[in-house]
Every structure is written in structure tokens, then in C-alpha cells.
Length: 286
Image (cartoon, rainbow, N blue to C red; front, side):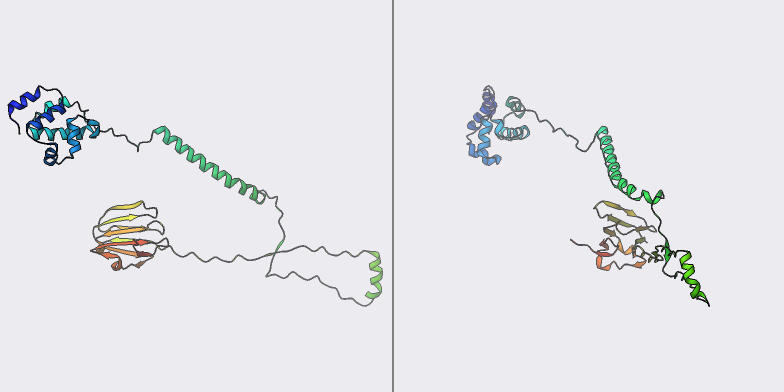
């Protein structure tokens, strides 16, 4: 430390760095001594005395280093900072990148709708041209007959007495015409389709308050809240991908009406499990 008279003499010398250097020399300290006491690199101490602020980083760091150096030497800190001519500490300007202008949102919505209309037109127009003959009645309608019905045979009249003699005259009198065969198209009775299997719904019944975190296949949150006792939840296959249940002992999980044992997925009264696309409950894969 230096006495008040020495400090008064040093204040008459212009320059912040010069004052610091003269105060250090008056106190009998070297650059290495200052660096050890302030825990600063010697090069930083030297830059402070030479007023090379650009080597010391942002103004906030320079002001802090000057305060520490000035307190060590007993120099007036406020006057020293005024003489240092370090740039003011300006808070960073925050720019929001999440706000989208209203005009841009409207343009994006119109663009998406136009894209949907174009895709629909590309898919619908060929289908309309391919099927319009069936709707306007221009398509030929073939005769149909069931395979279960046998067409009636053409009756044959047995020849009676004298028919042999009359046959040549009748044949000569009128030409024989063969019946035109009408094509038949087989028509199969529709086969009844099997009823689709019931969807494996995932149902939850809460007998006590439970905190839940339910995520969908896309990773988005389906429900994340505290569910009160007495409430129920039901999810269809493909709606839920990952489930976390707090107070799992108060929650009954049913898959397609069958109760699911949460013991394999439970730890410290918290159950974690995954739900496949078919609705099956499986362990969480890490």
C-alpha cells in the first residue's frame, strides 16, 4: 500500500495506465506480484497499464479488472474508470425469432391450401374420367346368370309317324335358323366379410389423484396433468406411444377390457411403459 501523499502526487499524472504503473512502482510491486495477488496473467496486468483495452475483451471485463487493480493499489476507483475511457456496458438487444408476421402466416396458409387443392385435383380428375361411364349409363351391361341356376334345355319334339316323309318337304319349304347363343357372365354371390377385430383400446381408471405424462407417436404431448380420483381416460391404438403414471398403485390400466399388470413397469410407485401401434403395453426401451 502507498501513503496519501504519494496517491495525491500520482493523480496529477495523466493517463489511467500510467497512474496504475506509478502506483505499483511506488508500492514496490512487480507485475508478477500484482498478477499473483489478483490471480491475473502478467500479460493482462501489462495490458491494463498500457491501456490496451482491445486485448482484454468486453468493457464489462475491463472495468472489473481495473476495479480490482485500483483497490489493490488504493487508487480512487471512480476517477480511474472515468479516465480509462472504457466503452459503456450495453445490455444485449434481444431479438425475437419466434414471432411470425400476420401477412406471412396468411400467405403460408394460402400456399398450403393451394397445394392441397392441387393434389386433390391431380388424384380426382383421372378417377372421374375412368369411372364416369359407369354413372352416365353408356357402359354396356352384359347378361348375367347365376351359376346356381342351370339354363332350361331346348325341348326336342319326338318324330311321329310320317314325320320322316314330311321332313324333306318342310326343310325345303323353310330354311333352318339356328338360335343365337346369348353370352352369359357368371355372377358369384357376394361372400360376407369377416367382422373386423375390436380395437385394443387402452383405458385408465383413477381411484386416487395421479400425475400423468402421456406422449403420442410423434413425441408430442397428449396429456400432461394431475388427474383427480374418479376420472377415467380412454385412448385408441396409435394415439398413445409412451405413458408415465405417478401414484401408479391408484391407477387401473385395461387393454381391450383386460387388466394390465403394471408391476413389471413400476418403480417407486411410478409406472413407465410404451404402447405399440396395435395397443400392446411393452416396457420402455432406452
